[in-house]
Image (tube, rainbow, N blue to C red):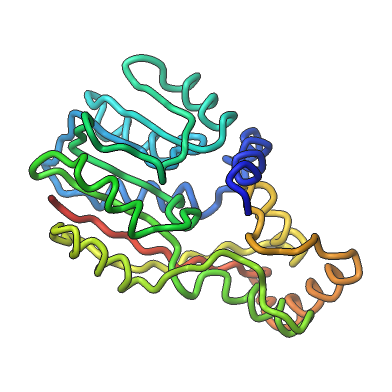
Amino acid sequence: MKKSDVAANFSAAADSYDGWAMVQQPAAHYLVDSLPAGFAPRTVLDVGCGTGALTRRLTARFPDARIAGIDLAPAMVGVCRQAWPHPHVFLCGDAEDFDAEGNAFDLIASSFAFQWFADQPGTLKRFAPALTPGGILALAVPVTGTLAELSAAHEAALDRPLAALTYPPEDAFAQWVAELGLATLTSRVLDMVVYYPSALAALKSFKGIGATFRGAAKPLSPREVNRLTRVYEDRFRTEDGVPVTYRVLNLVARN
């Protein structure tokens, strides 16, 4: 997808995002809770800040920190500016174009944003020089195995792979971080499952957070949606509902 389309989709979901972010919000909380005890950053960068799920947790734990956020979606940046005015700063821009020169942060954190970057190792390489000595990089990012049920149902129902994002294996991030000279403090994959009352509700959840799958030539027809939801229900419904599984890497590394 074009980045302008990604920005438009997420901006359109700015009002609905928090209500649908059933994995994104707890993932952001867990990431902040994984930071070392006694760590007290003065300057923080929230990469892909969205509507502020991570910022909210960061300001609660580090009330004296000054936070800068960057996101591609103007409407989501607007939400953050309203919620966290000066001394915090939120910029609308492409994190993949970040220039580390002149920037220094004790903590660079990102939750549920790196999967949208075309060049994930290159983007990490851009941010690493902006870490202060002893500074920390913290990532919560979906990895291989995410959306397994939807992917399997899509291929079975429509005889073609789901045109979704590419989720790297967890080991890839550990390797990229090590190549930057950062020491991993925590690396753990969490299986985070959300249950919906129906397969159709599960599909609607993606629109609710602004996520449109990359590479889809055209939207599914009503007949294809019916076929997909029927297979999804038949194969994966449990007594708790229809599951959507995210495998989320929680990684904390020190400079």
